[in-house]
Image (cartoon, rainbow, N blue to C red):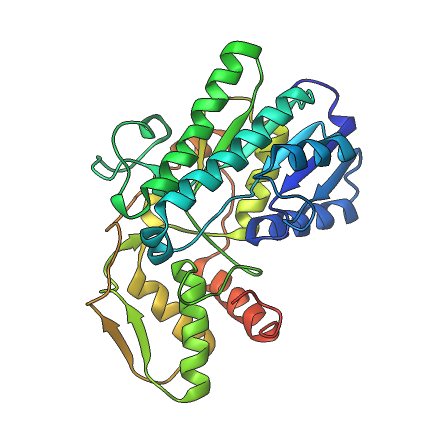
Length: 323
């Protein structure tokens, strides 16, 4: 990494979302333990509309970051993606181009952007690894979002080739945790399930789960991801992306996730799987071999413990949770 580590001013876009809040918590806990020489600024959409090049430039002008963690994006669950592929494509292309180009113009040493395993080819061999991003079209349900996110990798490679910038990206699997978007219609699978189970328990009704419960996912707790993000910012020196995930052996079915949520919230009613609803991709198993090469001893929070913490947070913060 260029420049002295002692003088890092880190700008986090999307700083009020799931991952941004987790990074903020991890950094705060570190500071209390005595980490110095870093200034962290967490932006929310209220600070700047990153779809506007002008607003992006003025926020960089204001804070003059040396490093950027780029989390801001238009995101949503399966059903919202299916309805709005054009919006996901255009809005994310604007945001990403503005942030990466402005970072370059302001001499930012390093940008770490956030991709997703849903950007990988739909027809592929498993496990997926970092070399396979561009090997074929993504799943048709979210092709707008997937192609926009893939373009971050293209931008990073070109920026390195043309200007020697070491901008990179991480590829997390399914992230969950406190401060998620718990919207049932448009959120991701786990927060939506937590909200649904909470309501079913409160109203004494059966829990209706969309789909068969059979698809497989690797879930990563937002606080584990945050610790890994901070490591990537400080230590990881490749332009090539890196998958941040639990191992293949920790892949779970949606039904496993439902069972964990039901247990964490103490739901005693019936669980009904509505197979008339789409399942999305059956699996997107990712290899974390590259991560393990760098960090063989990293300890992930056990899934049930992380689910319990997330459910407890949602119950305690029900009035302010995004839903």
